[in-house]
Length: 432
Ligand SMILES: *Cc1c(COP(=O)(O)O)cnc(C)c1O
Image (tube, rainbow, N blue to C red; front, side, top):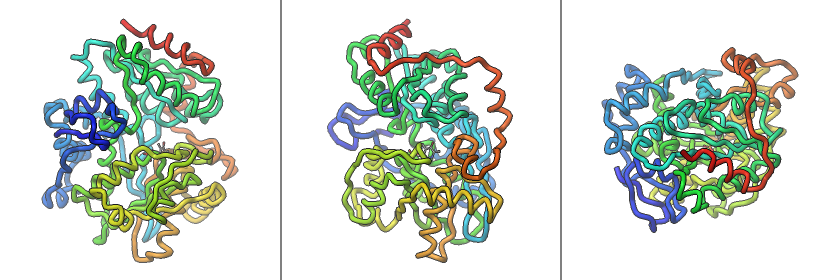
């Protein structure tokens, strides 16, 4: 499979090169030259297939020229080695729990798949591969964990000091020896600026092989479609489901749409947004206007210019009318998010995290117009990861034992200011 750039200026490349390069020079995003089509037999056999077999079949057309089957099978086994349960709350609403991975967030799947691909590809890169990632919390933890002790790959994580949750800080500062956590005295924008400057630094690029681990990378983006097949595997109703996906950079929902365009039965999608409503406005008006982000309690979705928007447009062949018929979008305020966490706990005894709560509230609004549609709320993180949930519910939430074990490991991070030179010196010290 070849991958072209959505800006059509950079050359098309293989999966391997797309995964190594991350983003093409023309600042587009890599996109598969063809979409795979899943067979009716495959769809009919979903309930009998193992999660590993489903992952292998879904991913194979996209990676076959770069990963031998035995390597892909092993990567898939390690990528989906935890549960993805679909929990019914009532007749019309189920929750797809994507938080049973090692860092309790859906990003574990993409990060694990990507890390193992890079580990495999790194064997024939002459410069030292270094993955750099700026995070507001979840991405960094998933990437650090995914790459823990990956052979021959270093990871540098930039996160804003004091602005991640207690659990996220534990996950970011108790990492493998190949991971360097940089605790930045600044905000997420500072972290992102430092990472971008490093990625564009040609002097650094001549010494290290620097790449980023955000959802721009096809090796992180593509495996996210697996969840949607695993959800349909567990879906009992004859009518296909509506998926309500809490969206920030729109990588997850773009992968869901990719699964649908490959033949997965889906009724429609709801792009659930917080106050960062660029996409909601686009669905309403047809025009896309990026805005500066505003902070919310579902902070992994505080993005004012979602990079995967171009992939969603591409998935509909540029037909934005068709896109707007298939994807609804609602913007949910922090008050409504908190109220949803309280009411879902009261009604069902179920604890949502703020991101899942945005998706629940958006699905509920959708069902006011489409009462017949049965929906799946995509729950992207465990509620214990966000300190706000305990405050909203006025109760303590138990952390899984694996997380509490992290408290026994001594904290390690390097505290830095916002000067780029410090980051550069640290990166250069990794050269070997
Ligand atoms: C990253 C993240 C999201 C947003 O996913 P995108 O692919 O960026 O749209 C939603 N919820 C949680 C918990 C996340 O960590």
